[in-house]
Image 1: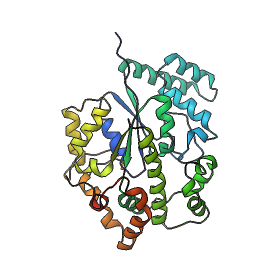
Image 2: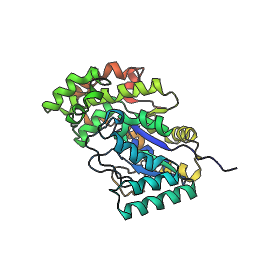
Image 3: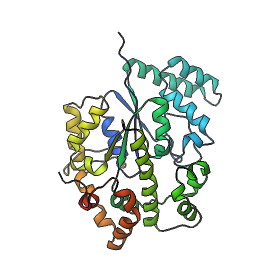
Amino acid sequence: MKKSRSANILVTGAHRSGTTWVGRTIAFHDAVTYISEPFNVSHPSRAMDLILNTWFSHTPTSDQHKEIKFEFDKLLNPSFFNTVSQLFYYRKNSKQTILRAIKRNILRHLNQQRILIKDPIALFSAGWLYRRYKLKVVCLIRNPLGFVGSLKKANWNFFFSDLIKQEDFVKTRLKAYYPDIKKFSETPGDIIDHGCLLWNIFHSVILEYQDKYPSWFIVKHEKIASDPVNEYEKIFRYLDLKMDDKIISMIKEYTSQNSTKRTRTTAFRPRDSRQTINAWKYRLTSDEIERVKMATDSIAKQFYTSSAEFEIGPTT
């Protein structure tokens, strides 16, 4: 009897919450093919022919819904015949694109490869992706102090005008945050205030997912960083992947203080994972820390049940 294909994987959550780290670590497994950020507007995934107009698109209400559906059907639909038929039907694809997709699908079918999509920018579409493609979902949460501190260090502001463009979504699912979203879309604000609003928006959506999709693996960044091997073992078990000695060795190497590993991208590089838990203490001023705590308290206390856990994350 032919063995059924295991579910494909989505790794998502707020950006700056460890999605690249977790996605790349899972992709150490030989049975996993890694695909990065198809929802990224500036640098879309080369594995798909998807060019989006807005950051953090909500697929069900997006005016590009048909394009998104079409491209993900090509990527995740297990029917080889259907994939090839779609490629020839859709005229924008060049011969090179068609041949590349055929080659990719042949290899996937021969090797029983599982697709792993790493994309925090797909967070608002994660429910749709899960329902349509029966994915296994790993969703990352990060302490608001760590999240805002990371944004400040990277100097990453956010274009709230892209959310305003998604009026149906913002005025329904993000209704509570609409006045602030509108304000920041019109007037540039402080990166701390931006970060707090973003954290609240992302994690309010994750709270909905947590209630609606209990089968998802929702995990705190700090928990993985404090005990990488044991926490990754839980993730691999959830994904029905064997975490062998090679992978354990790689996890230890990539999360230790004395790592000598080198990577092709600065977005995923070896680091002492435990040091990332409290890095916000050196990035935020005392005033900024209090601002973050006050602005995110109502959502944060639903994930972090004690002040100690909120401030420094688990220590064991």
